[in-house]
Length: 147
Image 1 (cartoon, rainbow, N blue to C red):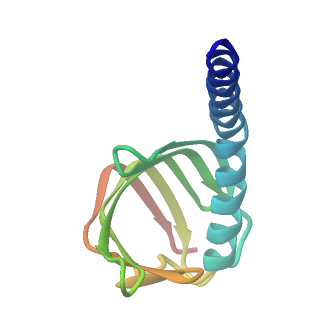
Image 2 (image 1 turned 30 degrees about the horizontal axis):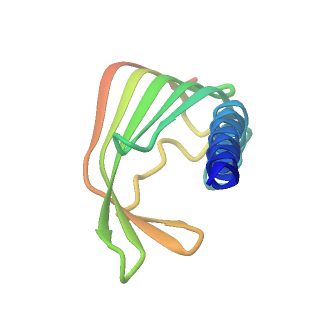
C-alpha cells in the first residue's frame, strides 16, 4: 500500500511539473511565434514589410490583441483587437466577430501606391477559413497628399 501511495505521489508530481513546463513554454514562446506569424501573414497580404511590437493571445476569451503595427512608410496602427468565434467545426470555419483598430495613422500620396486595401469577407488561414463580420476604427488620422 505504501508503494502505491509513493507511486501515485510521484505521478502527481510529474504531471504537475509537465503542466508547469508546458505553461511556461507557452507563455514564453507563444507570443513570439504568434507575432512572427502575424507579421508574415500581414506582409504577404499587403505585399510590403510589416512590423508588430507585441501580441497577447487570450484563448479563454476568444481574443487576440496586437500592439504597435507598423507598415512603413504609410501606415501605423497603435492597437488591434480581434474577437474570434467558431462558426462551424464541421466546415472548419471561424468568425472574426469584431476587429477593432485604434490609433490608426494612414498617410496616402496620390499615384504612389495601391491606396487603402479592401477588407475581404473571408480570410484563408491555412486549412481554416475566417468570416469577417465587423471592422471598427477608433482615433484615426488620415493624410492625403496630391503633389
